[in-house]
Length: 305
View (tube, rainbow, N blue to C red):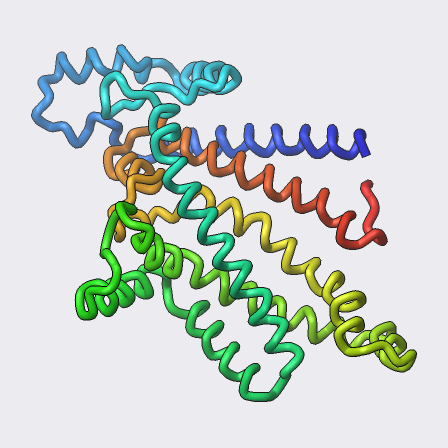
């Protein structure tokens, strides 16, 4: 197992390195620069800023300089906010995004898994139809449309829930539903199809033929295997939810990482774009790695290779 873990860690580091290099060159391939929008800057001031941030060096020199800082955990300074570093943005925004994401994950798991199980066990009946209608709506309608609709109904028309901010516990409800709507619907559909496939396997028919109760057949024999595809998707989903949704945070005016990422794109703040992208990618590959480790606990037939 230790050999497998070291191999995967090496692949994770290589993946993150490739992502950093690719994003670095993509950003510099776009015409203009971080100070292009500031047309009021005198040429000598712009030149001084470019020299200060070493933007007049060759691309390879800039890349190696950035990677050297990255190895020390330094994501570099912000080109747009003097005195601020990208680490400060992440330190400031990630707790907000993570708190929202954690509550959303609990909501998604609490709603999607039971919904998918009920839909599979009641296949073709009204419970299945209602669950799949809800899941289809959640998958097909974009999250920003759901967020706007929820805000209009429950905040503007009814006045039941706040439209922005986390000042009250009720302020979490609308962002959580809007952020988790797609994931809940997708996982519910996946859980339903996976469980239906498992319930049609020969070993399930054998278990029923032995006289086991339907509860034991489903819980002890079907659910474990049916959960494998769900867990595969769950890793990247958790990473995406914990690092926040840029659109949802913008709509509900939440001070998470999304605000900094959107602002950095409009400002062409290279280091902030690169730093937040690498932070998100790191979170994603770690979650995928943990999911692969978790496979063995769910299904003993899967071995580390």
